[in-house]
Length: 220
Length: 111
Image (tube, rainbow over all chains, first blue to last red; front, side):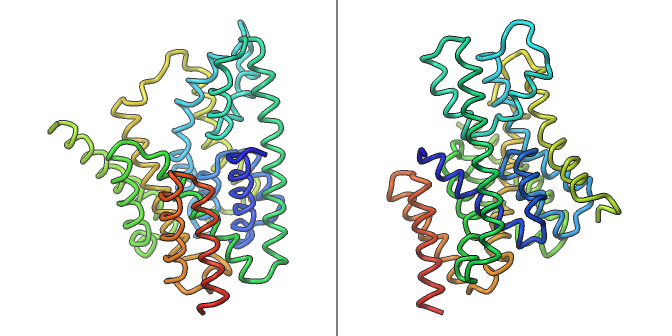
């Protein structure tokens, strides 16, 4: 297993443990990993539902974390889609678009004939997805049986993985500002408006960071 | 909260549909999007702040057994993870390992 693959496996393992701590069953956790297949959205969903978020609030918070999949999908699909391929079979490919598989596929597509790309992408996806569904189930099961210290360590995987992968993805100054504001505002809004906290943190912190980023660009 | 809907239905609506609407739109779009357009930059900032807020919440108002670990141990572990990540030239795996080692060390030896 490659290093990105190992990190991904660990983070889905952590998600399984997190799901159990939030009161979700193993089936619900594995189902979510399969149908959402985008870790931030999964954690936002379970965190929101556990805090009693309304369905609409959970939907909006999850969808805000998923917009980033649009440019990823738009970038990769034309590189592999076939002439007159039905939209349903294109959607089937698009469902697997998430950062790790996307990065690896984009890297390898360069040295590949067009016809080889779909088999490669599907082969990779249909290996990575089941492995991480297994990771989710194992994480859920493990956190129920291991000693409390190990269980705490499993629950720590999600925040530490997110903060580091977010740092490595941040490029513009607005990204760093959005991170800082989100870290500061998250606990505040959690006290003020549990259930809507992530939505408010995102909208307020993100908009402020975006405005500041624009102002800094203008000044240059 | 979500009324009498089964959890699986809630996951399908607020999880699957909320996520895959963007993948489906990605199938429909034929033009390449400019990731530097103002709208996409705003979306990126909002989702970054949202997930950062989630991280702070998961560390400070920690779930399950993690809540029993002293806050300063959790915060030191985050700091250790970030330091190792930077020292290893941006290696996420090194950061995760260092943070977990610090957390477990803190639990076993310091509290």
